[in-house]
Image (cartoon, rainbow, N blue to C red; front, side, top):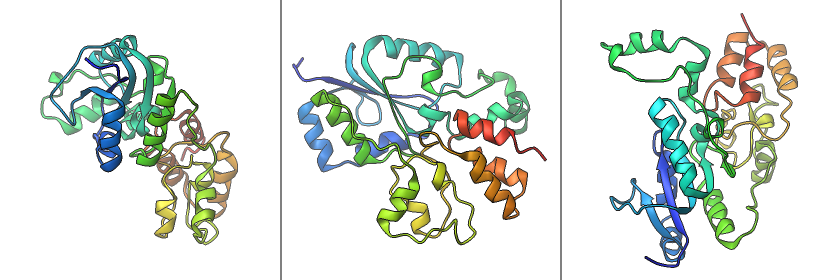
Length: 256
């Protein structure tokens, strides 16, 4: 036992990409291990120490009854709980099931779907327990992740911007792909990725979820004026953050 704050990292329905972002911190991770005691992090170590935990980082969405109970246990053991990544904060790609029949999807994919035990929806962590902080992204940005952990250790508020990807495009000197006719979710998407996709002449896919007060109605109106079909608009809004309320609600307005 040590007197260092105890950090736990938990996985639910996800691809492990956000946990890997923490491992990719490399030199910074070495410094982090000097500041905290990593008590539970299956991606990095088989050692598991019992709670309580000062900070829990939770990756993944809730897709089974077992996980719906497990997140309650994690919350009970955690002084601070941080949801990390698109799955934990907005359901992730697996939340596409929310717009259809999960039994039909299972029957199309699995030879014996009766053996599956899954919920009809995939939901973010905040739909089940109180979340102290959300960190967006698919995966999360390691700089933001380190900022959150450092801020929590120092007892201060993390410096995470709430503006859109457009600001990052301006700072990076990107030519606006939307002005050139490429559908782009950047004006409505939370910053944090560094505008990676627009830097390579691709429209933003919205993997960091909606920014604060996004004007999606105006954005999709521009898309429709440019000839984008309703089905394509729905698909654009139902990708990495399918269960984000703002994106989900706007997608429902665009029926064929």
